Image (cartoon, rainbow, N blue to C red; front, side):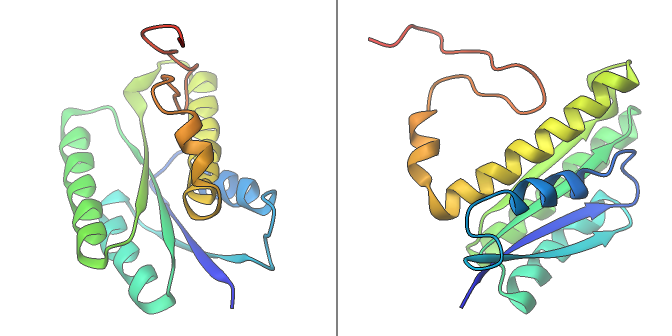
Length: 161
């Protein structure tokens, strides 16, 4: 029996982060044999919470990656917060991890930079989902290292002893 990794993206996003996450997962060891990908698209990020719960309960996903993009207006930030709350509730109700991968349009005024952030964040979180299921030691090795998704790593506050 293979595990299922859910990937949920939105039509509202201005970049196809779902395709990036799926491509990254397909490059991971065991794709097709160890795990399969279940992909769904919803209209906007406020629809992600219920779809996460459905992916877990109806499709048996072991972990879900929820990808969304918030506009730059204050109302968009409020909606992103509400969507985040729903995703958190889906995690609690199902006892299953959902990696929330949001990009906010106000992270950069440059469309090229914003596209890079979308691609990098989606790919790195897809890899994180894989590591959470199959190689948790990869995450432990990176603890406290200021690892970022979308932008360059910040690095640790203190050098390693």
